[in-house]
Length: 143
Image (cartoon, one colour):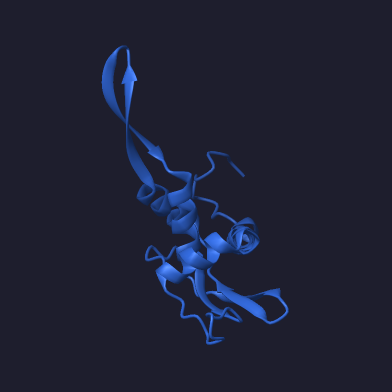
């Protein structure tokens, strides 16, 4: 039996160490969530096709990056303001930190993807080890 939870829950993040004294709580982003983020990053651009003005829809890569980082970063430690106080995790602060520390933003994206891949692999192993019933006909093959 395969049980599917149709109500995808927001994955709770896991703490990852970026550098000594700096760690980030990162959420894995599922395929469904990534699709939502891509839809949110679609912009309209005016263009010309066959001599006529047209409106084209395309994904803005910078907007997509911001959306991904905002969704992936749940919390952080060791990121401080100019007075040495903990910088609160807000959407605006995530944007500021990630724009100013490119390596950190690349690392967060990589870690989030790696975490999502690990979760998918674990689910795949569960499915791989499951056996269809003899009368399911799901594969179209006879046993």
